[in-house]
Length: 86
Image (cartoon, rainbow, N blue to C red; front, top):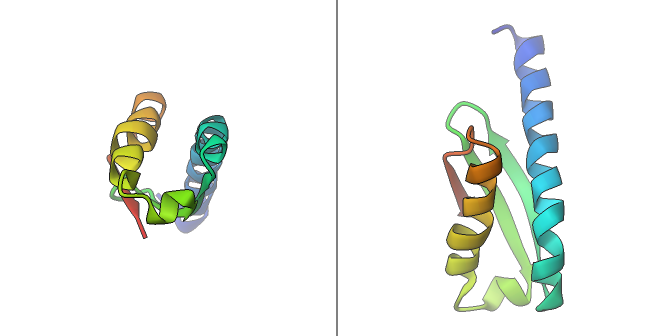
C-alpha cells in the first residue's frame, strides 16, 4: 500500500476500535473506570489502551482488559490480534 492508503486504513481502524470501545465504556464507567485508545498498530494488530479511573488501580484490570475488552474487539474486529495496557 502507499502512504495515503496506509493512513486511510489506520484512520478507519481507529474509528472502528473507538466505536467498539464506546459500546463497552458504559460498563466500565458503572464501576468508576474508563478506557482511552492510545494507539492502533495496523501492521501487528495490537491495540494499546490506557485504563483510567478505578480501572487503573484495580487488581482485576487484566481480566477486564483481556476477557472483556480484548475479547469484544477480536470478536467484532478480527484484524485485532492483541490488546495491551500502556
